[in-house]
Image (cartoon, rainbow over all chains, first blue to last red; front, side, top):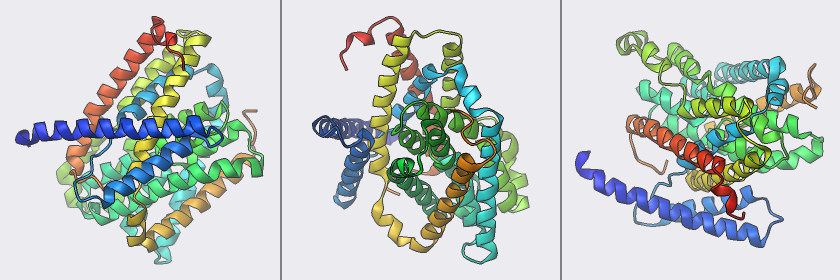
Length: 340
Length: 42
């Protein structure tokens, strides 16, 4: 590995340059045609570049989009205001519990009906319960059986569901007359990956983005626990005992950006930022997510979806069903419109 | 998947990346606080 360091460095540099190029193009397109939302441009240019890189013979550079994503998330802490807690509150925690119950129920049913193999269904449920691709990666690290194709299929379902939400939710919102707070809660709950959830929420007015971020922080806090539950259910006992996963998994799984967001958020709550500083940081956050979204699009492989069409389709249908249930709860439930 | 890195190596790199990203974010926040960034027209 050590010998390859310089090669890795040059690959990384290429990735940064390619990312900067696509971002510049997408931004230019947005400046020229501002009626199309910035997120659509970023995602579109990313997908195009990704498709082009897939076709080319030379190895495609991987784009370092996680850096702006994490940085954007931490900076978003500056937008934290006491109203967020009033907006999420206990009804928000209940909504998250409802999401988990419906996702688990839907995939358990799919296994009962022999639509999906148990392990893959468990992996889908883990990814779609709001934990996203990182939880799938973490589970695959310990459960060798799912490394490879099941992991790829689960990752695809999470990514495609995110892409569908990004395109579909903003169209759905005016049809259903969703207010910004409900829209943010809906995106934060039902879009599994942080990047897509925030990008989707970003298409609506504030406090949509802030609420989505708050729900993401809440969900991410449970990620380590969720991975453990998955491994308890699906990993053979002797393998589990040997690896002592419990202690190793719980400690490092509080993601760094959650800590960063919490620290900056606490500072914001204590009045560290003026209105003007908040506005500037808001612009910086939007830029960070714009860059990250180009990378998300780049990573979305349209062709690979067709290869595992059946489980992918079942996973997506179940995701759509549970999302609809959550939406029904948010709009018609006992606490509907609690933030408005 | 387009990237061909092993999951373990990816996770390890992920932690380093999170640290760097958080530092970048804090540097940007500091730059806004001292008034460096608000000078740039958006």
